[in-house]
Length: 253
Image 1 (spheres, one colour):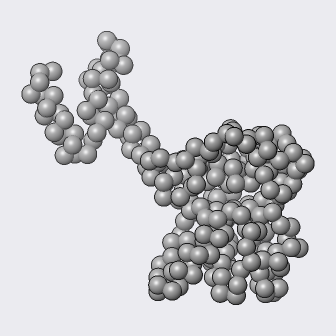
Image 2 (tube, one colour):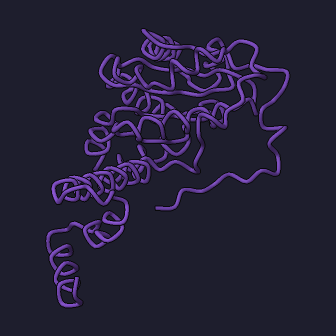
Image 3 (cartoon, rainbow, N blue to C red):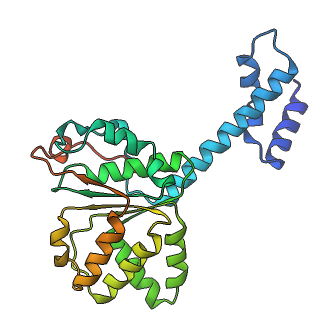
């Protein structure tokens, strides 16, 4: 192809928003000599589709606000006495999201709850699902800030609409009445409609140390555990201890 036509391809690719068409020469080199123009066109369009799908996946992951990247194949379940590899494979399919089921991870610090939560969230993004990640503290603060700025309804709608909501570290705070009520509403609004992953260091019997209202605590636990997977991640062999010094990879778009 002469230089003028190359420039025209680049111009049309930009105007039509078809960036992979700029790499048509790479597609040509991958084709066998006996393949037709039809084969070239199909290969070029497939390349564009794959590029767009990858871009969409990256946008979903960025929108989820994960603190860093984690993958399921990096998670070592061998140290967990009460969670099997078969269970993890089942959860990694993300069928629980399609079935609107929850996951509650309960375990002592450093057993991989955050790693597993992020890895499942990223897998859901890769499968085309919308995900939001919060620590319990950050979610509580955002709800209070939204209430103060008269945009609570908008935030609640956003939280209610995502396919998977992840609430990490539900154990390090004592929530006041307003925080408790707002957090309970988020969980109640998603009950049997959308999925939640919650991780905590505290057994359910200890949740009264976080929330003042005993009746509300019972109702919250009921909504989280109905049709859910409750994972006992307590372990005598903390996951984090063997990974100290290994840096987490931050997400970069």
